[in-house]
Length: 135
Image 1 (cartoon, rainbow, N blue to C red):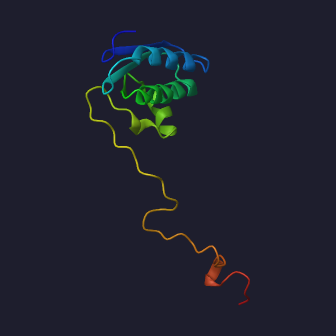
Image 2 (image 1 turned 60 degrees about the horizontal axis):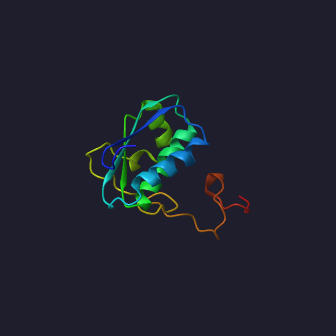
């Protein structure tokens, strides 16, 4: 791999066994490098991305983040972007040179502006009656 701040390329097919190897290589690459830089991961050579590719991107981001760097993704095709979106990770990775994506706050149950039902109240029955009562 090249010096941090340049690019790392992922080419070919990725399987589950490849993910720890990629993370270990990235970790060795970043060892001893001052924190604060971008690590650009070019995925344009990735063939038939699947869940292993999603796992790889997420774990590479964690590996870079633990060493004080930011992983940016370049060349992710529509299939991988769709999988990242399905996994809830699409907004976590910027293209090189873009500002860091905002990290969402903690999820809260329920919808915004909608009060969750009182767990002690019986559910409403059809016709506006309370469940368990007669008409």
